[in-house]
Length: 230
Image (cartoon, rainbow, N blue to C red; front, top):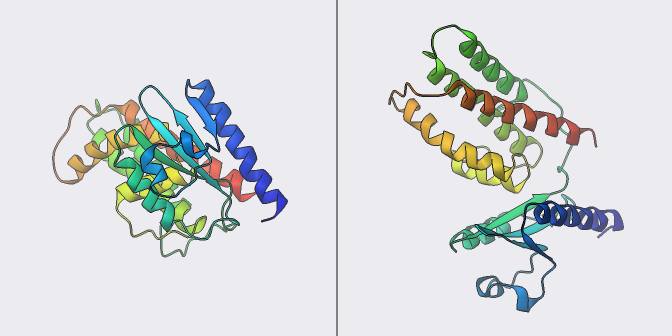
């Protein structure tokens, strides 16, 4: 492993440690075996960092694209960790596998698709109609968000895009496309989106929630653009 790759991983671990200490977590970097929960010991897995919180405990693994061979093993670990109440697994990639070019002839959604949907959403919200079109604005906004994460996972991280939405959200957290805080909001919004898509009318959809979803999409786009030029 190159020195630069090791340094990038160690820098990211330190950054995560500082971030979660500020949030009130008790953080252990590269915990020894005695500091690991029993179910992790049984996996024969050494995490890079553990953060113990009042409401949740987090297990972190940090990799660069050059040091990881496959994410399948970490997906298995993530699923196993989540079976234990109060525990979650966070996989962090410090950089993408390749620098993509934005193109219109993709077989999977593109950034252009995402922007088109977000624009439609914002147009529907701009119409003076006492929120009558908020449900359609939410569907358009979600389409814009989902197009963005499918593009990011396929183009930056060479992940398949045929997955269901729950798997897409999980992978988006693992690769840092969206934050854990955003994911909690998206989980709650997904239920509303599904109800509308299946014909259940909801007249209480708040404009602010749709705008927040669009902001998450735009923020993720900006972050991807920064990474593309690093």
